[in-house]
Length: 306
Image 1 (cartoon, rainbow, N blue to C red):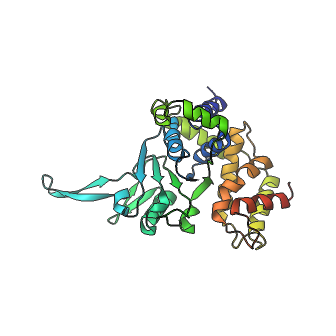
Image 2: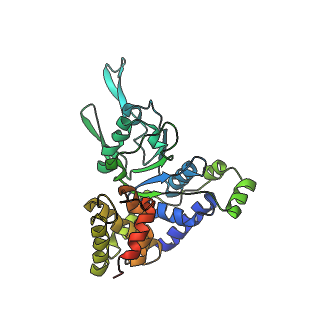
């Protein structure tokens, strides 16, 4: 089975769980193939946690879920050393962060101290506990869900942490046809439990290597740099994108190109992933009433194509 057939099977299986959200599912798969972390931002009950479960099972990855609450401590994530009398020594008991996929459910309900405990793990793929650095499993993905900030008991994620997420997506409410399928079909949790794993670790690494091998021509990179420069012009946003964000755009566009069956990046790929890849890193300028996503789309219209 070639790479395109595997990718089609992945997408088809996920679309049986989260119905009517094909574009958002393609974004999720692109994010994980690009080796990035994913933030799903939406109201409760639209399928954020179900989608995270389905992604982990479909990709064949070890999965761990943590419900973030206001009293969650960093050690609840990373683990602790406990003295065992029989061994007459402290023995480290790893926390749920030692998994290939960590679902950080309702991440913005935890205190900033606990949120920041994820920073080293997300960037360095390791955690430092009691002075000792411990590597995390490979691959290591964080899929975080977040409720709207106007809900009770939520804390805004710091900019430094938002910058570690390759993409932020929103599922939104299902359309009428998709909602009828949910109302009359099986419980989504039962569907997820029966999902087969479609990839091995080696197959996932091969797909990620194919993403890196996708060609980005110089005119395409000029276009990406024009977009980055526009965010720094103070016309659209208060503060521009960092070089890390620019790298994220290229990686996400390469994954999008692979999912579209191409071995090169087209401007359409950049446009398809740009709002999800950069909007959560930016604050719009002025009183236009636009959110960051709408401002990114307006900027895209103003920048000429290569």
